[in-house]
Image 1 (tube, rainbow, N blue to C red):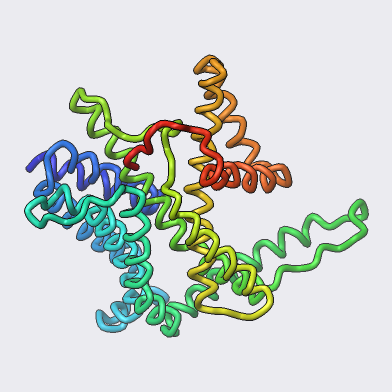
Image 2 (image 1 turned 60 degrees about the vertical axis):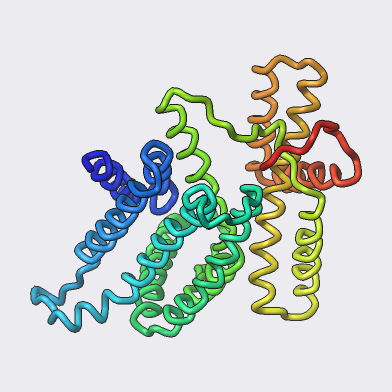
Length: 337
């Protein structure tokens, strides 16, 4: 029980240290690897309760020197509470779902490859999040607080820009408009939120599994990047999502556009990992030393984050992964990813 409390506390602390959902899944996954589903379940529930309780305390609102009534305070806190509860529950639930066949072997569920499970769970989470999104976007208190936050941010930014204007900068910088910024951020969030969910869930499961297995003195039985290959059938959802994104430039397709963008980003990411695997495989085949291989991979990742050059890298590396559907660079049996 002590270990459950410790891991739940660490998970809550990571969440509240500003890292959000990026790292808080890792301690829960480590505990599952070490102690099994029962300990994982207790720690997950305890983390959820602690995160929400602390969130209620931190988001408590006050008037000028006077506390609001309990009913009023709760009504103001409710949208933030629902938002936070949804994020945490979907993350923990997703982590459990991708391992459900191993957690409950008596159910005899099909043991799909891990990548397939991650994609399916991301889709399920997207469906479950729709009612919550509709509730939040229709809640005046929530939308007003978001608008107020960005209005304050834009005001501070415009003030900073104005204060830096001088004779050395004859061309005045146009002030940022709050409505334009909100529309842009809303568009980006709609097109990427499932993609980020997929990344966070994958990262939490992957790193938590490695740490958990190594803490027990064993070697993690996970697919290496050099062996990472996608089944050929994955090219079809990639093509379909790309076609919808291009078609949306001509004809508005919302909400299909949201699904298409998120799916496209997920599959481009997966084929990017596959492309890096091909690069590592070819470097190994050319007998390039391991240290140099890693330096080259890190260099590619850095280039992908570089403006202008990054766009070319982000096209070429996933494109290399897609090309393996027809050009079999690696002749070995496909790994069970």
